[in-house]
Amino acid sequence: MGATACMTGALLAGCSAKDNNNAAGAGEQDSGEARGNITSSLYDRGSVPAAEGTMEDNRWTKWLNENGPANVKYVPIPRWESTEKFNTLFASGKAPDLLFEYAAGPKDTWYQQKQLMPLDDLINEHSTEYKALLEKYPYLKKAGTLSDGQLYYVGRLNEVTPIRAIFVRKDWLEKLNLEVPTTTEEMFEVAKAFTKLDPDGNGKDDTYGMAISHQSAITVDQIFQNMGFVVRDGEVVRAWDSAVAAAEFRKSLYDEGIIDRDYLNDKNGEKAKQDFVTGKLGIYPVLLKWEQFMKNEYVTLKQNVPDAEIIPIAYPESPAGSFNPTFQNPVQMTAAVNRGTKDPKAVMDYIDFLAKPSTGTALQFGLEGVHHELDTAGCPVLTEGDKKGEVGYMTDATMLSSSMLVLEGKCGTANMFNPEIPIEKEGLDMFELGKDIYFDLNRPYAEITHSEHMPQLPNELSITLGETNKTIGELWVKAIVSGSSYSVAQALEEAQKVWEKGRGPEAEEWMKNWYAENQDTAFLAKDIYDFVKQQEGL
Image 1 (cartoon, helix red, strand yellow):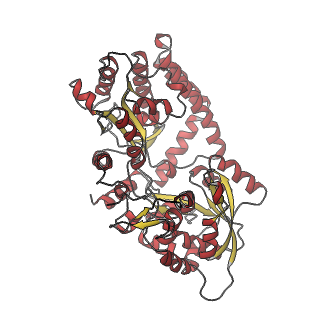
Image 2 (cartoon, rainbow, N blue to C red):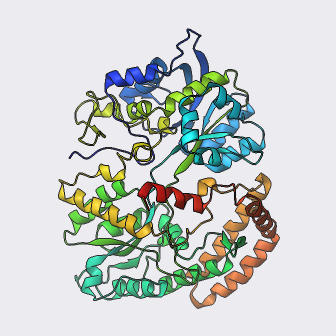
Image 3 (cartoon, rainbow, N blue to C red):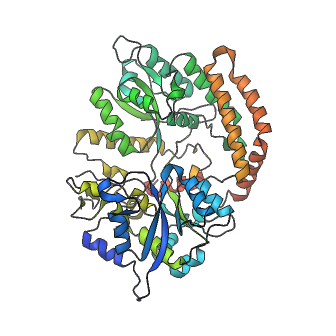
């Protein structure tokens, strides 16, 4: 079976070039009415090949205008400077009609500033495709409805996968006669052994027990439920005990030389990744897409160290408990409509067009027979050849494309692996093992909800709290790297003073009240678990 190029969180429906055109035509007005003229934002990651044009003017933006229901002018938004760009556009009165944004903060700001159009009536009167999704999947309405009870956000349904994990060198465990660690104390001892006992057998002191830089740091924090605000005994609290436990764990790792003591300079995690793929790292906490990790980092590790074996392990039990990692957001709110749009119906027609399975397939995989073929499961497989460079750069145009695994039960992450290729079969087995481990729904989720569904503090309070948390974070780091001259207890004492002066209690009270008032209506961890149950048949 051919490995598919399916992408997590995007809707993958197989269709031919002819089918694409027919499906697209269904989005056009049949009554002879004039096509609307609208504007839409589109993330620009600088990934469009020069031969293809620009993000706002390429073969697929032209395809959207030729096959879609409206004339769309695209407004490029630098991906990592989107907040600044949108602020400028709103200030100048030039914000696009359709606003695409992953982050919750900017969208909440637009809502608070009354920049967004409520969509309930618009959908009821003019939508077909998205209206049907709302009716079949009420979670979309729940996640898109804001505090005034009206729907403002539209989005997509994603396949749920664990997107954080801890990988351990299984061959090192076996060589040193060690068990898989199930507690943080055991994990410390295993990491220490991986550092001190020459697990690679080269007679050199050149291995690290564990990584804690960049994204590894957040995964470690989840083990201890060191997530800032958490739910304890039915109410939101600031988890000081978790912060202390996480800092003490890191300090012990640092003092013993179990981690790279230069970890603070590993700003993007590249040093830790290199340690892993060159066979010098024993425990690797990661943020990942399984198909990418297994086809890149894992393949490189096996090339460098053919006998290396890794396994994912459950988060070890910490003083706060045993938790699951972050899961892919199953109901992702990705877009809103500018209140000032002059042609709301045309915007809604375009939203419907983007939500069509055939549109998502074309934007990701091109046209059947030209850019992709269908495998035996009916999933698109990109073809090799001179057409390959014509696709792959329009992922951000699929922010309203739902996963075919959710809608039709096929073409998910598992289909990205070709089991006929031995190393891809290993990757598939690792992914299935990871799901078995991390979809243990008897364990609580480490956070209140996925970060994209977290409530947003009032803007001024949020800015102040950001500075407060930055200062507190620096105190924990000082304790970790200062040996006996500055303890975690000293850091805690100073951190709590900073918290009191930096509007921390005010933020905590706001979060308590929000949770008390919205726990039955907000999209929370229990809803994520419900989605997993439906997807996995649990």
